[in-house]
Amino acid sequence: MKIKILVPVYNDWQSLSQLMYEINNSIITPDFQISIIIVNDASNHDRKDENKDLKNINSIKILNMKKNQGHARCIATGLKYIYEKEDFDYIIPMDGDGEDRPEEIKEFLKQINNSNNKTIIGERIKRSENLVFKICYQIHKLITLTFTGKSIKFGNFTCLPKSVVEKMINEKATWNSFSGSLKKIENDFISVQSVRGKRYFGPSKMKFKDLIKHSLSIISVFRKTVLMRSALFMVLYILLIKNNASVVTSIPLIMILIMVYSISNLALRENIDEFNNSLNNIDNIENLK
Image (cartoon, rainbow, N blue to C red; front, side, top):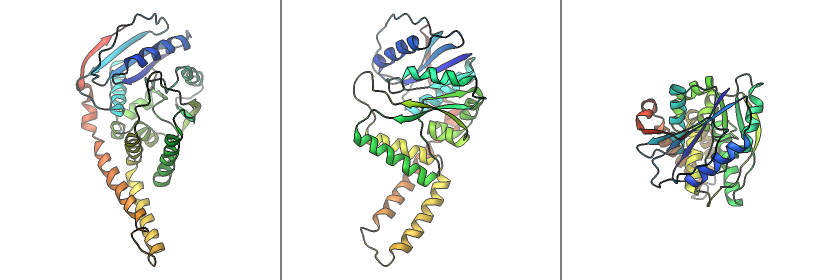
């Protein structure tokens, strides 16, 4: 069975090298042919040539992008490239910095034979970030559930059968949010427990504003539901505070309006024409193995 591991990278070549080394050492099975597809998001740092013996990895390719397009769009481009150009059975998208742990790939592989062609997700049961980030992440999940009716407990780290990949590359929301798009097209998942690992090198690059944008991008996939629920909330809230209206009591209304405005703007990122033409952004392809 042919497994493609899809890894976006921007400048963090040291972590990527460590990731490939750990994938090679943690997956030793004749039942699966493991290959790695790296999407280089127009990095401006040169990588060092390292001669590690990665005998358990069948092939390694780097898709070098002409221009930087961001994490989500790199994954979308990678999915499209693999679906159209590669022979595969499953794709495993994962981060290249160590926060998605290579040893957990084995749990995905164990589930494949009995998965009945369902998507396997890494459901987060523990995170490694600081307390403030963890609190913000829980707030993000609560807001997402409240306004979309969707509980999304996974990120990019998943195992996608070919049939689901086909749906993903024909869904414009994939160009904006991977997890939001996957939740939109699929409801029946197989879950494996996943612990958010620590970065191999350096601090996390996820800033607070990036977390907010990430959260709103997911929510924007379900904007019709969000608009209806937001309108209902505002009507009920206005009725509740009509005798005590003030600047302070109007703050929740203002925040809802800001959220609706933000997700409406982020929803404009769902451009199916750009997605369909995304392979044109590949400058060249390197075969490392």
